Length: 383
Ligand code: GLA
Image (tube, rainbow, N blue to C red; front, side, top):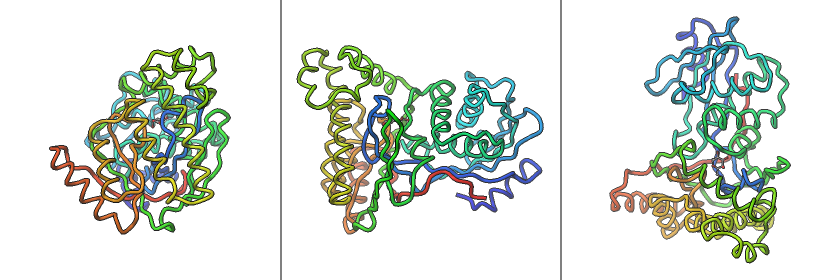
């Protein structure tokens, strides 16, 4: 990623004046708790040391000019008076979605010039889109004195994703990006939106968190994510509860008799996954990161077998990492592609990397991108 000085200089070159400031928001890895957020359950993500940065200058008119340091999209122009859900493309949907969502809250949104830089890999399941949205909403909150709380910003960016971008996602990703903290995972109760920072320091435990980007690109605006959400809503309706959060492990036997087999498996994933999040929080407190491997493995098996959101590349990454020495591994994020994480003893890192690369080559898959991540601070102004 370019330095803040470079970004400012590029901004001035492109727009002819200095930005009002530069804001940064991280991507996230979800440690555990997948597809539980929109079921009002529990999640445990952390903000990572990969981020989106936006240099922003408010304009006296209603024009919006958007440019990035990457890709081939060039300058995109829009007008705050006619933000169009249908026609915006690529990464510009995210900032335009934020402007639109703020308007839906009744805020008057000024025109702006924006230059984006990001080192969150796109399509890798690490929330590159939310990183952009969170950086911009923070900038606008400050520059326009909108007075939004972190929770307001979480809900506004969810609205941008759901109703502008068309991805029916929950609140996990933006919560991690806005409220994350270095050295911690964020334990979020998606019903009352309370958060608790849980110390998570892999490095001190002699571990490294590897991300294996399978390069199978996914999109939550596609059908699979919405279909899973639909199954969960059906399950809750048949079981007579507000959300699957209200079903616990002891209810599963009865649920099995009431639901069709596929819906039952979807429900079982959510119910057991909520329980795994709670167990992970307890174990991190009592025994530290080395103890959570089996829960990561069980989470992956549940997503593969019950929720049906893994893919052969993710399964191969997880199985290979485990046999080469990772203490636990699972796909992370919405699924159908994207990345797996492998919590790995430092000494085993080279072996895990080499084994996964070899396995992908042998299977004829595109070479994966393997890198380590650390916990990082949440969104903030950097200049
Ligand atoms: C995506 C969504 C989140 C969450 C995860 C699955 O990342 O944006 O809201 O539903 O998938 O856990």
